[in-house]
Amino acid sequence: MQTQIAEGVELTTIVSHQFKTNQIIVNFRAPLDRQTITQRALIANLLETSSADYPDQRALAHALATMYGASFGAGVSRKGPTHNLRLSLTVANEQYLATNQPLTHDAIAFLQRIIFKPLVHAGQFDQATFDRQVTNLKAAIKSVADDKQYYAAQQLNAALFSQEPAQQVPSFGTAADLETVDAHELYQYYQDLLQRDQVNIIVVGDIDEDAVLAQWQAAGFEDRFAPRPRPFYQHRNTGHYQEQHEVQTLSQAKLNLGYDLPVFYRGEHYYAALVFNELFGGSPLSKLFMNVREKASLAYYASSALDTFRGVLKVQAGIDGQKHDQVLTIIAEQLTAIQNGDFTDELVDQLKLGLINDFESSLDSQRTFSIQALIDDLTQERVQDADWIERIQAVTRDQIIAVAKLVTLNNGFFLSGEVQHAN
Image (cartoon, rainbow, N blue to C red; front, side, top):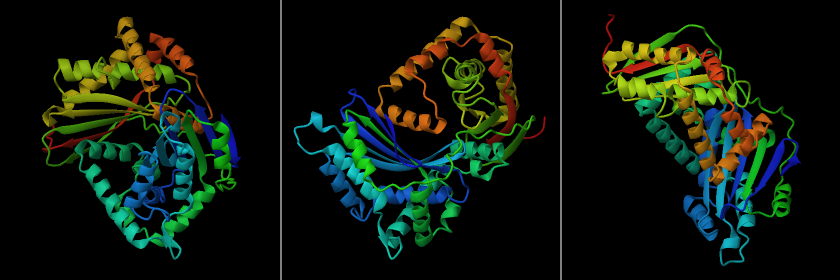
């Protein structure tokens, strides 16, 4: 059931008797803005670790313990041209415990206190807590950046979206941006976020929908009249390949490739694209895995992934730096083979079965219900589980070939441990 709490504030309740826990997600959604990405990530850290009622992590942990060990977290993510700040709490369903404590009610009240009563002094976030979370976020960003594969992927991302700075930056921001943030300005921005962001509240479990609705209606969310964020960002196809090369100290070179693929979530070609990706590099039966990694032994790993909120396809490969040209050639040959129909119907049937098995397995996760509800709200479209399976099963080899022919290699980033000499 979906109910409008206020203009721009939606509550979705999903009654399910499948789980012994109830999950509550509050998602703040705004258009992706290069200037606020890091701020929103820092706010997520602050809300996850403190509030006026729970001024430190010990107090927070105690509050969660009184709710039979409820699990609470906050984070940020990106979907196309939107940025999401998400608070999530999973609590035991009191129906399965020997208690009269209204745990779901208490969990919602806890989240509301976190949202509307942050730890603030003199019109700004508590300075000591703010400083600590700036340090923690810097350390987290640095630890991720130290991962060579992540670094290569991020450099590819910067090249793919060179025309749009907001798309280049990770969803959790940059360490450099943290140097210019202060506790007062961040609190002012948070007040603006509370008034302007689209809010999507998802509650999943064996719940009393009327009681949940009444509690959120009383929370104090006000109307917001900013337009709904767009669900998709369309990558600009350059029509030609350009590669950047960087040398660092490492034992295994990284070759990351970015392709334009104008296929979007649940749009035309979407289901065929899912099967195509499994065939190209998205599964252990794929051409990249079988031919590049296994048969030719040219890569330690090689895989592909779709981003259907931005219209791109990416390939990651860990390789011997001396074999760059061979790897680039053989990856291109795998795409050409699919474009030419060089694959069997039996393999396609196996890939479809794998997709369907993964999809059905995901339905055992309460988180899947919550995240899918957020995506459905963003795209304003919902597909029944049986319809999803039917559409995968209906994909034809001609449709797979058609998707493959839409793929255009645009950018590459090669991170090697030695200088490459021209042949």
